[in-house]
Amino acid sequence: MTDSFKAFVVDEDSEGTISQSVRDWPIDKLPDHEVLVRVHYSSLNYKDALSATGNKGVTKTYPHVPGIDAAGIIESPGDSTFDEGDKVLVTGYDLGQNTFGGFGQYIRVPANWIVPLPDNLSLRDSMIIGTAGFTASIGVHHLRHNNITPDDGSILVTGGTGGVGTMAVSILSALDYKVTAATGKLDQSSFLKNLGAASVIHRDEVQDESSKPLLSSRWAGVIDTVGGIMLDTALRQTQHNGTVACCGNVLGHELHTNVYPFILRGINLAGMDSGNCLMELRKKLWNKLASSWKPQNLESLSHECSLESIQEEITKILEGQQVGRVLVKLPD
Image 1 (cartoon, rainbow, N blue to C red):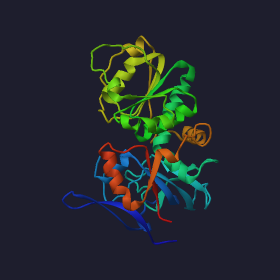
Image 2 (image 1 turned 120 degrees about the vertical axis):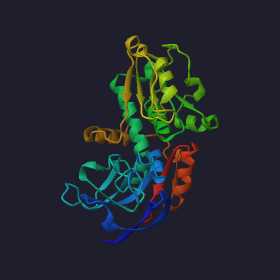
Image 3 (image 1 turned 45 degrees about the vertical axis):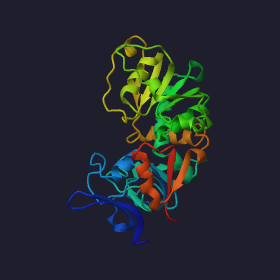
Image 4 (image 1 turned 180 degrees about the horizontal axis):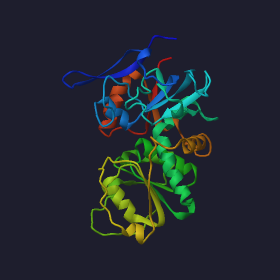
C-alpha cells in the first residue's frame, strides 16, 4: 500500500488566510474509519467551493481535503461486509466537510456511508450524477410519491443551469414530464432544451414581490434549487394538490410566504436533504438513477477537470458562471 497520495489540500495559516495546493498527503493521516477506498472520480459542488475557500459553516478545521462526492474501488474493507475490489460510491454525510473527501486519491469512511455501485452505472457516470443528481432524484421522488404525473401539467425547475437544476431537467424529461426551466442565463436556452426542457424562461418571471397571497396556477410541481423570493412565488403559482420540493438558498435562507397555498390549494412543500438521506431510500434512488431515471446526455451536461484545474472551476461556481456539472478525475 502506498504511503501517500495526491490531493487538493486547503490550508489555513495562523492569520486565517486560506490557500489551496495539490500535494502529497500521508495516507496514515486519513480518519480512523473502517473502509479505505481508492477514488477514481469525484465532482465539484457548491459546498466544495465553500469548503475550499474557508467557510467555517462547512469545514471547521484545516488542513482539509474537500469533495462531498467520491466513486472508486475498495482497497481495504476492514471489518465491513464489503470486499476488496468492490466498486462503490459515497455522497453526503460528512464526506468533504470535516472528513477528508473525494478531492484526493484515497478516502477512509464508515461502512454505513457506502453505496454499492449499481449495475449499469460506471464510476464515471455516477460522479457526473453525483450529489446534484441524487438531490434532484429526491425531488422527483417527492413529486411521484404525491402522484404528480406527466398529465398533470408543467414542472418548474429553478436554477436551471446549475448542477441540481440540469439534473432535474434531464431526469424529468426522461420520465416524460413537460419541464419549464427558469434561469438567469437565457443564452443557455439551447443547452437546457437539449437536456429535455420544453421551455426556458427568465428567472424574473418567477419572482413576484407583490403581496398577493395566491397567483394564477402555472405549475403541477416545482423543483426549486434557489430559495428566497423564487420559492415563495413558485408556491403561490402551484396548482391544486401540487408539490414543491426545495433544496437551495442562493436567494436567501428565509421564506416569506403565507398559509393560503397550503390551506386553499393543498400544496405539499417537501425538503430535499441528500446529505443524510436514509440508506434504504438512498440505495433505491441510486438504482433508479442507474436505470429508468438515468439522466440523458450525461457527457453533454458535464465537463472534466483535474486536481490541478479545480481552483479555476471553484472560481466559476462562486461567481455563478458554472453551467452543468464538473467531473473531477483523480490521477491513475
